[in-house]
Amino acid sequence: MQAPDDFNPIVGMAEVLTANVRRIVAPNPSPMTYRGTNTYLVGTQDLAVIDPGPLDISHLEAILAACDATQRITHIMVSHTHLDHSPLAKPLSERTGAPVWAFGTAQSGRSQIMDTLAASGLTDGGEGIDHAFVPDHVLQDGQSLEGDDWRLEAIHTPGHLGNHICMALGDLCFTADHVMGWASSLVSPPDGDLTDFMASCARLQERDWRRFFPGHGATIDAPHARLEWLIRHRKSRETAILDALGTTPATARTLTQAVYTDTPTALLPAAERNVLAHLIDLMNKSKIKALGPLNSDARFSRL
Image (cartoon, rainbow, N blue to C red; front, side, top):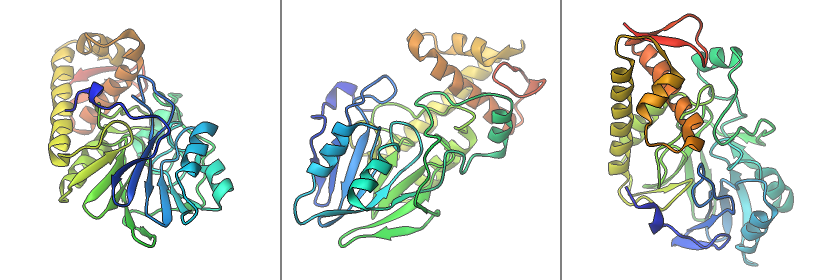
């Protein structure tokens, strides 16, 4: 895992990563976004923009300034509908005429158990959901889009969000927030589903990748090692939660205080959502049960 201080890009500047891939970091650093959202430009003439980013005019101008007189933006692709990835898609489309492609709206791809949890009154957490987002075109799993010197394949990778997709460019993969270059991905019910997240990790493991381009943080040069780390990390959290649960029923909040002992106070709400995601996954595995209706205040016990 790369040390965070090793990634210090110049915000707003297009950095060349390969012959036809550039990265522009948005000016939205935070504990949830690290240095900022990574926006990618793919191509040398007809350009695809992956994850335009937050609604920030200076970032919009930076994207447009990265295009010279021989280039035009023909496709805008959104990996998922968190507020740090999708809101700038519409203004960029209006300026360029390029259509917006995504898996769907904020509720697309959400699992049935998460629909039930949302109906209980639990709202989104973490980065915040772009509920107003509607793509011009829906990208299906496995569908490809093409430019003059690129071909991008959509891979539906629910978990961080139900509508999350990665984009494959040969043996390179734009992993957005599923696999990041600085921390593990937030899985925040009811929009994030850990069971789906682990299945998506396993799906990515099936292919021979050379490099990952994440939604936050540095390029990942050892993608399979990173995937293995993510899976081990989640399994270790699961073990810690089960150990903390012991023989006494407990809520996600109580378990968070027992497991996340070194986490800054400001990040504890996100940690609590992660614990809830693990508890729901453990229910799916028939290792624990909820005592009463499933909601954020539910008590859980081991079976």
